[in-house]
Length: 365
Image (cartoon, rainbow, N blue to C red; front, side, top):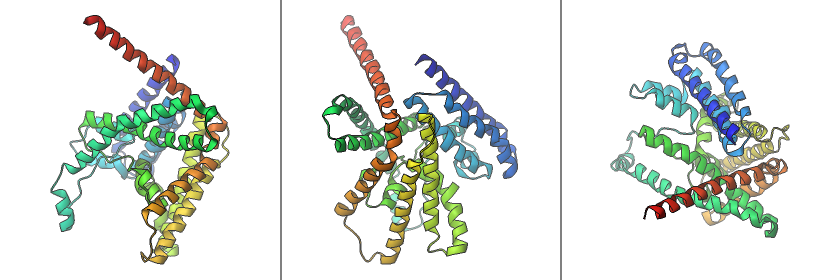
């Protein structure tokens, strides 16, 4: 673990230095192809840096942040678009803002402009967003505790039904990703003093696939795929299919890119050749989401399933297809057991620290 931590520090020092290069030099290069070429060395560096890490808890998030989010943000930055360009337009934003926005899965909340009486009414209470963020932060320790309890259940794995084990994997995935992303957001909020967009929006309350993937699950990915994939594909499709049906190929293309990026992350975690199962998982989700959008257009709001029916169907579909296509590469290559073993080490380290602190306090009194 000592060498892993040293590599982790080295990776992030080089990543921060790369973003400083973008802040001080690249932003002065004309947007377009010239700026994109100037960023190619950074893309290459971000692709190879995570290969230095082999642990699940350090390598997984680092790969997600650098190889996916950071590179996509820099692609938008090449053409003066996206969150990095927006950050530069505000003179009050500093280098620290630019680094955090580039390297962490955060998005600064934009103040809505009132366009109607209803919006004006909502803007009368500027603390409402802060209150919601406070509620999410208050629930974070509970989610951390639940995640720790789920990891501890692996001790009783041999006594559990396979369906229960797969259900626990789904819960582990959700809680693990949310806790990881929320930790970085809390750090950024504390240092920068800014309001951030939520990264998850209670996905267990989803009423449809469109609602689950577009409005509730991992909104940082949704926010970066919309301008990089969905928007351009929709624009091209509009000329071919018309405005009404253009979103359908855009949805499928967005899920395809998401699947390929997940496949790439799986390679970093397993270091084995891809089997494309996770890509097919997202392609399936994309096709079904596009079909759902088309069905909604066909009925035009005349008929809708109640949430007590549509919600469980949505979650069951995502979970069942996940067990079929999303998790096999993880379990087949022992990534789940590696994550559990690392979590046990962290848990034991934390408990040892708590015990030492209690012993110290008792010694003082």
